[in-house]
Amino acid sequence: MHILLVQQSAPYGSSHAKEALDIALTAATFEQDISILFTGDACYQLMSNQFPEHIDQKNISHMLKALPIYGLEEVLVDEDSLNSRGIVNLTDSPVLKKITKSDIKKIYQSADTVIRL
Amino acid sequence: MLGFLLLCEVVYTQHEIKPLTLHCKINVIDMNISILVLSAPYSSQGAHSAFRYTQAALKSGNKIHRVFFYQDAVHAGSCLATPPQDEFDLYTAWQALKQDYDLDLVICIAAAARRGLINEQEATRHNKLSHNVSEEFELSGLGQLVEACAMSDRIITFGY
Amino acid sequence: MILHTINKTSAHEGLNQQLSDVIDTNDSVILIENGVYQAQQLSQHSSKHWSNTAKHIYILKEDALARGIALDTSKLSYINYAEFVELSLLHEKVTSWY
Image (cartoon, rainbow over all chains, first blue to last red; front, side, top):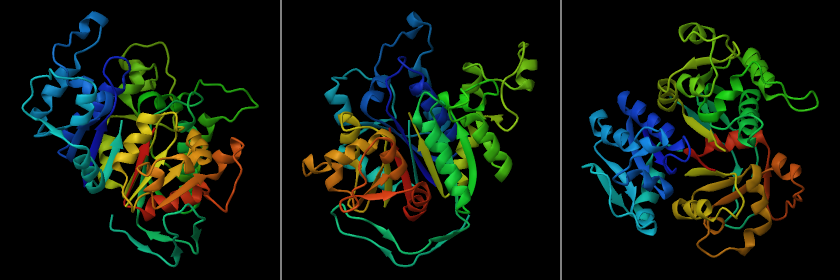
């Protein structure tokens, strides 16, 4: 069962981004076959130099850095979403892989289950 | 979890938007569905749509593996919510559905705790004055959602 | 073969665009909740819009009736919740756009 988890939310303005990542980490812990895709405003989660302690929140990029430890070898990022938002400086992670719109369509179609958060 | 469809004469039209006629009942054996609910009762229609979908699935004889309440949807488990008498009470509706069909209603324990929903056990553990989760709902971890994804033939999300 | 649900109006351009980017010609769409308002504008879109790619477009009857959308069955497929469930099982998976 291949699960596609699609992250859509910018971090910190709501709990959605963090709660979506919690599912990804849990699924990875349970050794599920998952792919994670960051698209739309979720690409803001990948920016470097985040200091959310200024607003009393935990740093979401620490969770992102933990993904490889949980067995996630690849984190997919919508290239168009990055470009349209002018996001250049990404958090340092060896597992980020930029993909195109047509790649995204393929992974949606091929997954057994899609959960968008 | 093996399932197969007995499909007869489902008539499709071409690309135009035209009426679809389901000519006969579709018998689906051994397929089960899980539902992921993300939005709170009253605040968003998604909470109600999830209930109506689940109810329809059960009435049609389908199997519901689990209904998992996450993010603001954890409020569905409140035993203190009190809608006006002339409004639909989604809280008691879920409780009744659980009782009629022995549904597995699971609320994410971490999301619930953050939002002030705790059961008796958690209240004792955290030294809280009281508890407010209905007995029909089980508090559990995201592992239950992941298990539902792995074990269900279909999982449908009702968002906000 | 995906069954997509969408619960927002056409004003949510980003969401509708994402669906348009992902949808395939074997996929179908159900308009639910506020998404049923899109029923009144389906003929107004470009060729790349999801409404011109979807194999079938369904509208949840209860949501349409709630909102005063005329049930014009000559043009659109109205379904109830039981049929929504059946369609979920007919397709390989359900993807929710909200």
